[in-house]
Image (tube, rainbow, N blue to C red; front, side, top):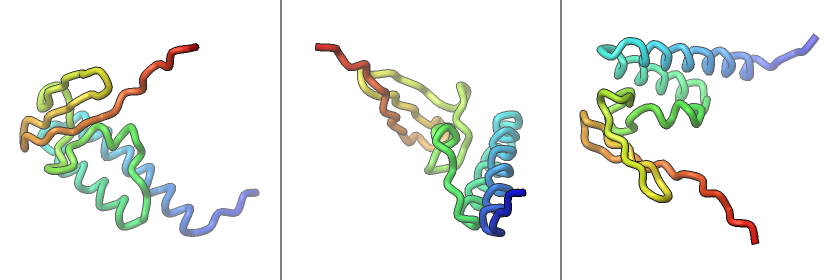
Amino acid sequence: MIIMKKKEFIQGIALDRIYVLFKLAKKDKKRSKKYVGLALKIGKRNRVRIPQELKKSFCKNCHSYLDSKNSKKRIQKTMLKVMCLECNTVKKIGLKQKRKKM
């Protein structure tokens, strides 16, 4: 039997709730800001980092969920620029490049 500390147990529950809230934000566009805000609060309160795949899916300025309807995406050579249409902030996401073999 694996014995977990109380802190690790609570952090696991918090991470599960964060994932659920992001799924709800993806489904319900009207309440997406509220769900993302709650997920960020849960992460801060329980000292849980938001996973990298979820960090890319919301605007850090206004906490709106970024999907195809409320964001513009533009691909450049080394980065992807995502613009939030609600607050007009630009998020830059680096792209991995293939290395050339010598």
